[in-house]
Length: 454
Image (cartoon, rainbow, N blue to C red; front, side, top):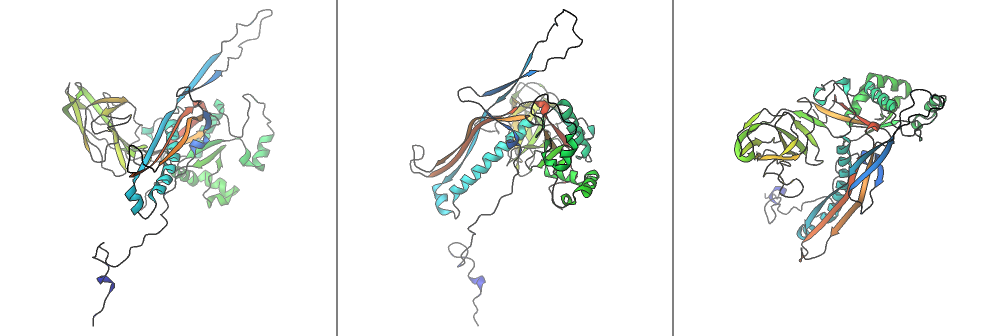
């Protein structure tokens, strides 16, 4: 008896699927979520058009208090005023997504509309990434357990209440302004109100604000002191994924907090295909995430490489980890402070000719010393370090020269006479001003947790 089964009709034919019509859902799947925090914490500052790209802000430093009382009839010597200024430079950032007319007509989902949505996400995440990168220039840093340097942190150096207390005490001693705190520079405080308001409505208290990585938040949640306090005061916090306030600091987590992972060194081989002078050189490789472009993989500095000039070069094979592009630094000491040059780098834009954005697994030739730039400090090999930022009010601001502008090009023009391309573009002109380094700090720690499963 002849029996016609589905297997006889689900392959072959014009499309390779027989007589089966493939189904694709009308709704596209959701993307992973990013938590955006620090861009919105910054003070909004405006740089007027027609005044260049630099924004300067001034402060006058307190004058010294008198050392001794006045002598009768003798005027004091007096004090000189000291001006301090801080400067931020606005930069233009932007990008585009191009879709062909054929793709827009033949793909099930509306590609041009999807390009608009993705461009919007890119703008918000670029704001956040740029702000974090600028804040890493802050000069007040605590390393858990007073290790003194990122490279000295160990696996057990996780964030804990003592480190929060240490940061809070330092900021308050310095006089960093608090959110919901006093507004005047010198203000008489009511000593009787603290305990009353703390019990009545703790969220209205003066506080600093911390932004930390979700894994670091879990270190705090597992701390015995924190668990004990919550079990007596608010057991719901143990169930509701709350961190809230601790020690005068209110916490917010963000998975866009940058991280730094230490990895074993990558070494190079000397050659004669460049412009390096005779000498001993060291290189350092870093890996940038292809999505955020954070330099998060920090390889240890190489062994010494003896180069013979004046046509010296160095050949290096960068790692092959997917999801990363690579950058190579070069110097004559074990602390390189310049990018290397290479013909394998970008061929246009401000980083033309620099050894950056190198494809994973590539072997490239370093031909010389390039732009001055210092790589992030490497943690110990095998460890990931997480910065936690603790902010007082007025620590930094977002300088805006030009707001975000989107362009949607869907019609023919001289460069596209047949209207074969659709382009979604965006740009903005902004910078980050470190208003006062004394008003914020960061705590660097490792974590007992990771984002891997198994």
